[in-house]
Image 1 (cartoon, rainbow, N blue to C red):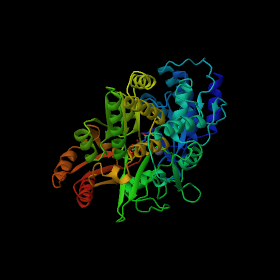
Image 2 (cartoon, rainbow, N blue to C red):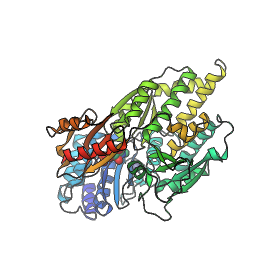
Image 3 (cartoon, rainbow, N blue to C red):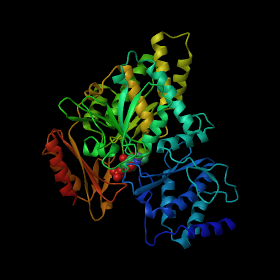
Image 4 (tube, protein in one colour):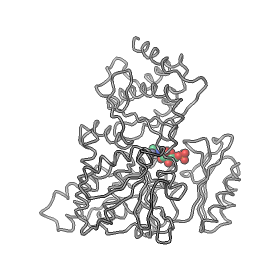
Length: 517
Ligand code: 16G
Ligand code: ZN
């Protein structure tokens, strides 16, 4: 068929380096950008097929996320703004690795398996954020990853989720934020001020744009805005979380409230240094705790009986899980690493708060929850003032949140609003519970796939004897826990350990690394 000839011709302009094998990993393809030309071309093809299959707009994002600048990634966004369906990840891998002469048969295999109508014309705007010679795409240019997810969702819900433009995104979030902080009285300028590390990425640019919609409700000083440093180099959320220290390029004075985005602004972590110059990190677990506590209180005040849960991964600090389950009496679920797993688990609840410890997270509201909140917020005559205020706050909270995916800009607005409404300082937030000291290490092994895990990656089932060895080592320390898992994004095995002291956590992580070899 003519279109296949054209695909073949175009594809030869984007040749696959011989022998290069790549996998659609936890969050798309990731490798040195030099090797991504053929991947971009082929993901364009896959996006067209996915669009035909779902009869909806599909997004394509190119991003290095939290990785070094030269390491780029490509991922597809599904119709509701969620991650690409798992079954299609293997198609992506198959297309990426097909040699030039196998490409058409690989495409045909997908078309047949998915029963895609070849004759159907490509629908108007099938793929966002991708320019190519195909001429079917519209291009959003530079946006954060969550902005693209948001816009794909808006497109496919005929604007019900908001306008499918960056302006529409700012308007929706900022209006909700302004309404929320209307509930915070007497904030001083100090309380309104936040230092933001933009990781030298897109988040810094987009935050600056967003600020023009905020009308002084928040004052930010942006560091690492891309004008000097390299993307994610010695800065950004991943650096701060893993190194447990402030990024370079930012002046942290005692008591300043600071946060770091990652390179594509889908992660955020907070931190401050105290009067003794000790660094305190408030990671995704602390954020989940703050948000879920706020939501639970509002639900009670509003008299809404909705099921709320927090979804975490094995990386969640043991203290956070303990606090949520035993003090907050909130249901806690643990899933495998990777946003799609957390997102999926959060969908089971009326209000599902999900966060990875690395700062990626959001809140999902079921349709029933949104309807009840909406109804109550409109119902002014029959309910008392406190209930009405809580319902209105819940309504604004729903609107300030980007439910499609974790979003640093949206999370930042929500956190700032909660702190303002509660009149809480970052120190008070930090004291909600004390993190167990922890350490993450990575170990290079000849083949990381020999490690297989179960129980949401908390236990290794292979190679034989590894879990017994870990169990034996953990017994040597107090309040200790450790697990290993093969990375889904790098050719390494990751080791996590926590214990009662930093020395013990470090020693345990080291011991376990040796057991992995
Ligand atoms: C990806 C995931 C992130 C996960 C990380 C784990 C998405 C959008 N991102 O960045 O959620 O924490 O991988 O990486 O799913 P690892 O497997 O190398 O530890
Ligand atoms: Zn990211």
